[in-house]
Length: 315
Image 1 (cartoon, rainbow, N blue to C red):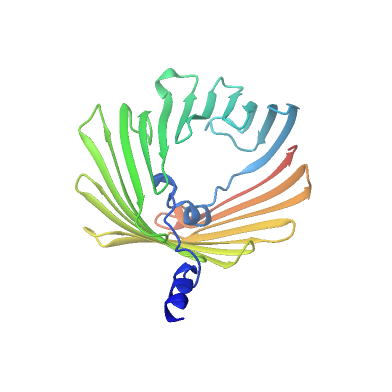
Image 2 (cartoon, helix red, strand yellow):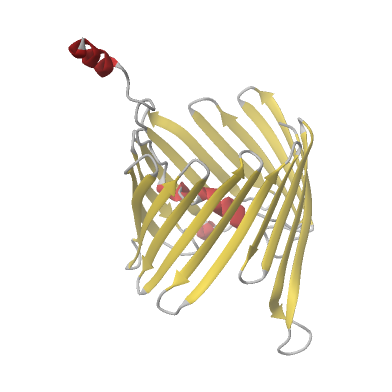
């Protein structure tokens, strides 16, 4: 009887089910995405109107009008025509504005484990051409990326970058990134580690660019799934002792979404987005920066304000 009981016990699965296995952590450039979208809100100024019209299940046109603001400093209005094509394997997003600037984004699956991405911006002046070409590898517990870029981050010339992330445990991932400029002898090295639990995640990043160093810590918390999320980040420069901080929150209601953020420089941002119908969305944007720029009196700072609203029609 004792031997039979032992054989039966051995055939049973362990208490608690099968152990959790590590999964692919995603690309290195997206490790900070959960926190960044809360602490760095994409506010805008003026009025925006966007109309989208699907012509076929795979093709759609978009008209975007901007009043009171423009990407060009000498203009206060802007128009952009967009065309989007996509299916399950590839997506192409393109646009052209009244100044002749052409933008494009292409995403596609090359192999089941290899994806390609091309992003470019061709302004009226060819010297301002910007392009990024990526090859993304996604494995069962790791991911890697090879990047070739031209004139990015305000630095002219060709840039080459490579990154790798490995899931050590189901919650801990470690990775690094290196990129250099082929035209000038400059390089940047980044190392990061991410710990992700069911309701919170934290990322620690160390960056070295020449003699400059930075240590950044980010924290993301899900207070109520699908309802309330919080995020914060702290960046330190060990050489000078300077520090920057930012905090943000997102509140998702039944038909609305509210984003709030504040940083250590006195900049406060907010976005309120409400769904009027399945095909209409209204957005209000506000930004206030305390004590920036010179005021009318010498040595006295002046606050800056930026407000905007947008109406999006179409699916």
